[in-house]
Image 1 (cartoon, helix red, strand yellow):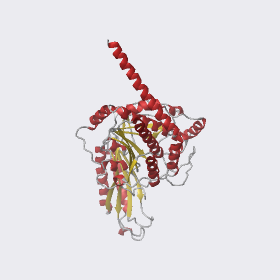
Image 2 (cartoon, rainbow, N blue to C red):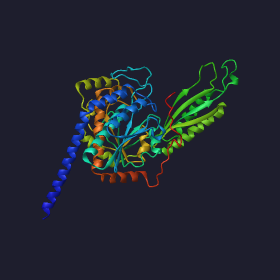
Image 3 (tube, rainbow, N blue to C red):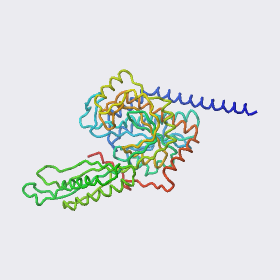
Image 4 (spheres, rainbow, N blue to C red):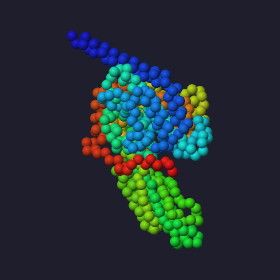
Amino acid sequence: MKKPLVFSLALILIATVSFAQKDKKKIIADLDAKKDHYKEIAKELWTNPELGYLEENSSALLQSELEKEGFTIEKGVAGIPTAFTATYGSGSPVIGVLGEFDALPGMSQDAVPFRKARVVDAPGQACGHHLFGTGSMAAAIAAKDYLKESGKSGTIRFYGTPAEEGGSGKVYMVRAGLFDDVDAIVSWHAGDRNASNPSTNLATISGKFRFTGKSSHAAMAPELGRSALDGVEGMNDLVNMLREHTTESTRIHYIITKGGDAPNIVPKEAEVYYVIRHSNRKEVKAVWDRVVKAAEGAAIGTETEMTYEIIGGTYEKLPNEPLSKIMHDNMTLVGGVEYTPEDMEFAKEIQKTLGAPKPIESAGEIQPMEFTYGKASADTGDVSWNAPTAAVNTATWVPGTPAHSWQAVAAGGTDIGFKGMMVAAKTIALSAMDLFKNPKLLDDIKADFNKRRGSDFKYEALLGDRMPALDYRKN
């Protein structure tokens, strides 16, 4: 009597899997049918790159596309003119998709395999955020279509997140409570390989130290001057000595953003911009406090005045293994990036300029899932401590290409970048479909999230209660 029951259950399981595969094939086919349209949007963002908090056209373009698709748009969220949310559907689960679109200063580059700025000293998409924003938008639209056609309960929400590059845009959005009702976040980033790894990275605090002294003729009356630049250089000397007495994974970066107006004038004003990183946000705060003391000591020693402003601060990323596994399985189904002969020729020329190239064929492979410890930082970290979050990387760049390089900008303006973008869009859309189709998957995802975060966690933004630094790129 048990055999017919077992046989029936097997048939039900096979049918369920068959229907799921049919749904996934349709999502993939629909995205393939729209790939040229999404390529045009990504190319527009690549051609007209905009810096953090200044992404008016980029944000408006993505909003327009989502509005056409039936999403409800909320503009200017968290006090940021270029931040927005786009929501479709109702009820649970609520699945979020992140989309970035800001560029980097001075990284203008043409879509050619040699160094050639499109516009000298202009911004460029050196971290692939034109692909990030467009690919995530495409995934959100595909997930919306699935909800509409299947009649499933659920909400898909796209987050238009500006100023990731040093502006901590997502932190203000988290602080404003925009992620409080989200069950899971599925995201991605441009890269040189296809991988879905539960991973962490480095927390950060960044800020500007401003010194004020007294100007004077540097030759005729130097004794009357108090050099603000001396204050900056004294601070830098002290911080450089501090490096010997920090934990091994600490990173300290700085640039002098203002050093005076002329060498024969004792500088009255000077400014230095610092970024502190560590794998633990508590250590970041501790090192930051020591850097502040170095600045205070330099001001005393040079008889200048010092003020400082925290510009940004981000948490280390909280990994989520069950959600990463869902995304890994879907990326495996989608497959990697296939190069044409033209792509291969471009890639070979790019690799001649790289210090550590990797096999070009790896762009077509899906890397095994493994836990990784990243050395970069991102404001996605704050999101991951407020909602279960996982992200994939796809091969939008020639294997071996580092982020923040002209080679990344170049590949991001070619079919290599656009193909990697569509791999990400499909992976995210399929993962969102899995969560809508089987909400019980969220049980393991939330259990992993709660275990890693701890029961006593209380969110406090590292940048405090300051308003968004909307002008941090204007100078």
